[in-house]
Image (cartoon, rainbow, N blue to C red; front, side, top):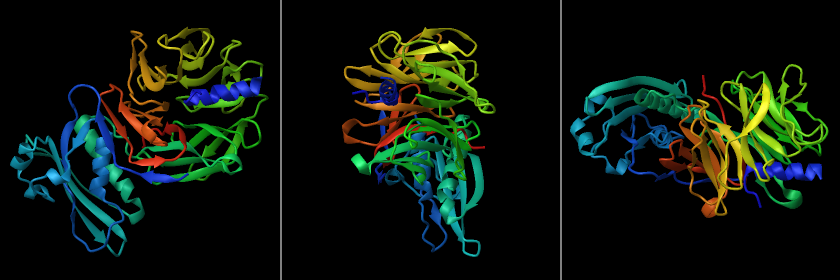
Length: 435
């Protein structure tokens, strides 16, 4: 049995042509050499009110920074003091603990406006220098958004890289069996919290992908009895069917400029890759081969695309110019390499690689051809790239962790299991950076 999204697509092509939420702890595993994450202390925030806050802001920030792969928050139980402002910091305490940065703050509550106000300061411990200082407020229902905003500011100030903590995930869940099976298209915060259902169906939903502006999704749905591609506005739920050709309609991928899609169609016989402008909805065929060609992924410059094909006898990753020409095979290690996605700089492609009966996250360097294996579970599937290029997200079903989402840094140095699990999860997609 094939255990990744490529397997789902290939199985569906073959047939055509012949949610509960569980919370756990953030799990971190350093997988390569020494732990190179920068140490930071996020001190529990002081509370200047009697109103119970629905969210623990400093805890959310610690989880965010842990998830970044670049920062290593200190456990509060190890802290020697708990300052709430810069004036209270004894830098000696934090140097003894080996901390590079320290974040302190206080939370107030404005009862008249029904808003929480967070005052926070970030310091460089060795320089005893204030790097950030600000106040921000939020309604009770938006405290997680406030925490993610603060995490973004801290991460970018320390690393110079945009934070991804206000981005969102789209994914599909499958629950039940037989006549009781239900598929749900959902969106959530990047850590899996605050999930919302956009679509329910008793028929499969596959391959959601975000528009470049983060306002819409495209996906494949079987709700009409055969596959079709839909386009949906996330905020309003407004949607329309944009591809319902004879045979297969699957694996849509939005172009970097937002003006067209790559998708797999079999309307002309074999399953091939087509480009479909969103203004005309008239598809143009890009590959021509009797084999299965599917799972297209645009390059960041919009001039090439990667895809999965079994033209060599088993699924492998290929790359082709949008202007035509023969495709180039990229993967040679193993009998199964599928579901390619470009890194944000276009220099590397990530994919699912089968080895010794396991399905793992791998990558190939487009300049050198070097292939690497990044994950170490038994069954990993459906990779999605972080919009800042630092992390790859994927679904893992290893060790009984059905429905778990894992991330790995692109260098493979560390892996993280997100604290929220969605049973039956598949096909995650990562939204662009929030403006």
